[in-house]
Image 1: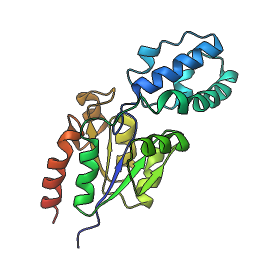
Image 2: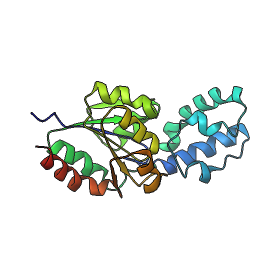
Image 3: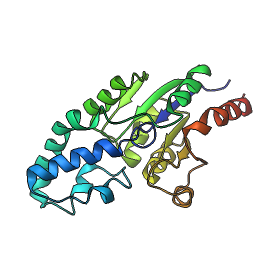
Length: 206
C-alpha cells in the first residue's frame, strides 16, 4: 500500500519572495541602530537564521535584542510587499489534487510566517516555524513527510536527515551545483515545474 502523500515546503524563497520585505526591515532596523547593513548582499541568499546574518555587523551582546526588534518591525514592513513566487499556488493545488497534506516547515518566526500565509490566503495543514537545517527533520518525520521542497542546501540537509525525498528549486540563493553537491534528489527551475513533476512521481510510485 502506497504511503499517503505529505509534502513539506520551505517558506522564504521557496513559496514566497521574501527579499523585498526582508530588505525593508533590515533598512528600518539599521536606521534605528545607526548601522549601515549591506542590504543587497544580505538579501541575495536568504536562508540562514537571522542571528547568523546579523553576526558580522553587530556585537554579540546586541544580537538578541536586534533580532527581537527585527521581528517586531517585520509585520509593518515585510508582509504586504511579499508575493507568492510563480507557480507556488499551483504547486500547493497539485498536492491537494493528489489527496495530499501540505506542510510549511520554516526557520521563520512562526507568527510572522502565519501573517504571510494569511495575507496571501494560503491554506496549509501544518505550519511549523523556527526550525532550521537538520532541525527540520524532526517535524518531517513526525508528520510522515513524503518529500521536502526547498531552495537552500540546508533544506536539503533537513530532508536527508528525515530520510525523505529532497526536491530543490532554483528560486533562492543556491545554485544547481550547490544543491546537487548537498545531495538533493531533484532540482527544478521553480515551482512552476512542480505539478507536472509530481504527477509523474505519483504515477511512478503507485
